Image 1 (cartoon, rainbow, N blue to C red):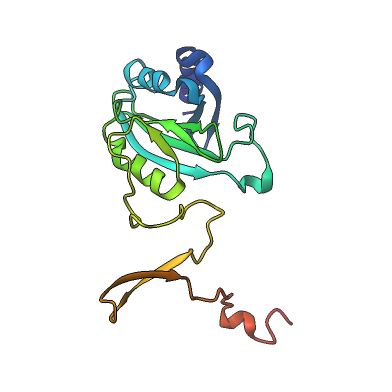
Image 2: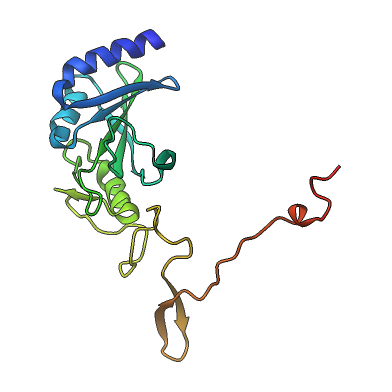
Amino acid sequence: MAADLSALRTSLTGLLGDKLAGAEERLGELTVVVKAAGMLDALKRLRDAAGFEQMIDLCGVDYSTYGDGAKESNREGRRFAIVYHLLSVAHNVRLRVRIFAGEDDFPVLESVTDIWPCANWYEREAFDLYGIVFTGHPDLRRILTDYGFVGNPFRKDFPLSGHVEMRYDPEQQRVIYQPVSVEPREVTPRIMREENYGCN
């Protein structure tokens, strides 16, 4: 398997050229990092020339506290990335492609729905949960949270209890939003509270 991954890495390095920012082999899979500037061309090459005809998954990642501030050489301190999981049925191989958004304050990447139409809802999910905007997306709107929801719940700086809660108000006969009224607390398992815990 390692020889196959090395050969794949070599062929993708030649195929992607200067659009490739890095590559690493880990856990029996190859991960390539592609520059955001030429991402659509690179992904089309992976589909057409390398045979990765299927996009299995797409997910957002927030690297703000990754490794307690450690920076990967190909990450250059950028916070948000999209990870594509590709499959080549013809060659029976999987590939992970990571692309970092250029800005942390307003992360923007191009939509890949023209390359893999199945990316539509995945991109909407990344937009909803991470706030990553996909230019060229046919219908970029929230998919998991309410339309009036404020914030992006998968960002690492999003508060654990959220900002607002909603409930039905019988007097107004409608759903209302109000500030969160739950006090944060630390729940310690009963076994940890025992006085003799850890003593011989």
